[in-house]
Length: 323
Figure 1 (cartoon, rainbow, N blue to C red):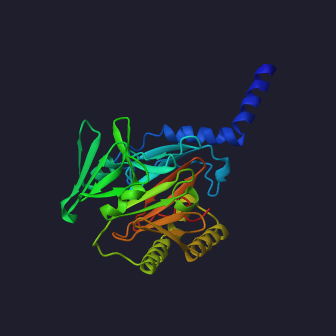
Figure 2: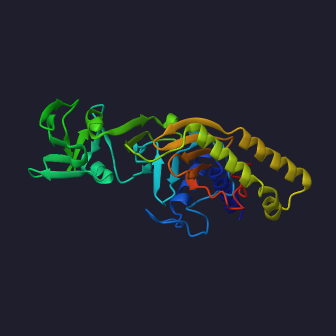
């Protein structure tokens, strides 16, 4: 019996070590069944939502200690990331597209051009036993032709020399993206993990088509976000009391903290169609076209991009902007 107790205590101590704790949390998140694939929503009644919340919730867990992170997006898409598999992520017109994988070949960013065109709804035809691809955009009077292992492309029958030759990898043609994206009237940017404000381990490439939609300016988005957070906070006190039954000191101090955090929200950057703002705990994304707002919610081994419903009286219940 004594030996059993000693062994049991050793196992408990091992599980409490930082590295083991991270991996256990990651496994729990990966096994979560609350969200499905693309275009699925949470089983809860919340607006497009969340997958995982740890009971031992940590707002500022050091990234250097995280061995694996699960990201969950509003449509239910999940991606599991470690230092070893942290590939460049792709966002097309503001939507994360995990089914598209880009490659770095000889230090050149290569993209699966037909997959990209399909997402952009641009016609792309494979010919010559899949060794040649022709892109047609009739609205722009544009035709581009690529051939595998040939660095010369034809743009409306004019030759251009790309930085490298298209490659055929697993029956998919990859082309040097930075050599041709501007011919498609596309805006593209590359972000390292530290500057993406979305991924902790992955770099990010954004691909955006021109849009004639009206949109908010950065200042308009900032005011919109602050006004709505302040309006939503008026319901906080009542719901916090129902949830925790706190004493008056805790209730008042928590309400004060919430108001301070809202007042300290600051603009950080813009990526794709999103203005990015940072509060004390969370990064927030404001869609400049449709005014949707998202929280990037961190836990020990997960990040969840959650769409905010400002009309939800329980918006701040679970420490969304207070500890």
